[in-house]
Image (cartoon, rainbow, N blue to C red; front, side, top):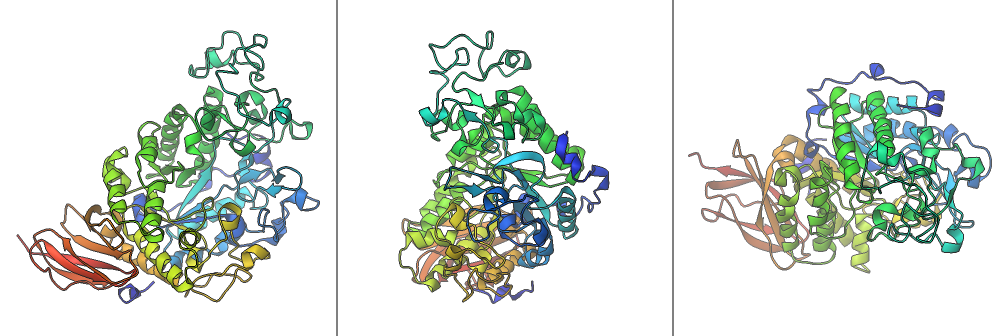
Length: 613
């Protein structure tokens, strides 16, 4: 991009049948290059491979014969595979590089159960979260060799690669004898202890087992009967479907019924019916460490996004996270980035911060940031919301310095796109105003503290109908009717055609802001101080600065649709300001104050010059 921003507003079984890849095969650039970057220096692109680009139509059926309920492939159905793959991702790296992307995070690529769900309401594992084989990519996406080629191609461009991983559950394979009658309701440890079969009145089982809080091999060797809450059964056709092979043993699952997402069930229940792993079991801990250490060793990836992190016991993470960092270090991968998904729709970051302290996550997805930005841009709340958010940065392990590396985002594949959320918040909003609010959101994402995450398709103006499947449109020409009737913003295009337009206003804006961060690195790595906020919509301002050099930038945003002005407190040594984006005053109004005026939904980036002491 040019400087036009100044004017711009151990592996087992079937994995060996594929391709053997060893760490010795990895030729990666020197550590002094892309791997020396802190997470905050990166611009991350989150993508569902199935919906991005189809680079190899021969794998669309995943090597399976039959109709869509067998193969999982139906490009006209939003809940089935559409054809995107690893080859497509590799082929479009130019597009991502021009956007300013420096790290790619993709939804899980492990082999999934092709189709599951009740009759008449089936869907496919296109999203990657219904894993059966953790040791290789799903054939719909490609092979281990193709994954290796993708990683090497990304690394050759200085791009990091983050895998989306799951330790909480597998695909829905295990059934319960009593399940249909009991409607798979959650059965608690108090009502259904490990010591009795199917409840307090049942016969004694698992003698000597002292419960799941004694997490050693000796104790768990006494847990031999998994029928304490339900009687788990595995259909004969799926008896050996999971890999590594130990995952086929029902003893390694909680088997307590569906979670209600509250209380005890949040960690011990089946997430939407998926088989919930017994992550307190030392064999499960060891097995998961071996699985994911293998991906680091074999492919030299750069980090993990951890799915459903809050549904796993803290002690698991206290072993797993250090083990992954150790393996990465042993394989010459510094700054290995691990961030957990801890959902909470609240700008108060206390809840998500606890997972960096108790559980030991280096970072968590910044759901608090997402909610705060939605609050001020979509719900007309006062900009004090953002001040409260950043005040809470002290709650993270490592405090405000650690918060610099939190992955920030505006929307995603579960909650929906930012454009969709704003459209829900402001019914009847005109397309032009919606585009303006999305632009402001991306300005905040790229300029405020954190490692910004772009949700694929946002840069092409995608506006979904809702969350989940409705927010997972195709970038290549779609055959899905309820995607193709969406009205996109910033373009006359629809999803019925390929959308890799490098002159789309959102693509250009994100690219320009990425270039601004690159040429002025303090905008990515600098400490942040809130300078101005109010109880209503209007101006919010921060400084980003380097405490060693003293270099400082003033960044201001206007969340109101009307022009706004404010006197912004600055350091008393500040004397003049140079505009890098938007309008900035040429000089301070008085020592310690600068008057900033912004158009509706506008923002500015000002380089602050200070007098020499």
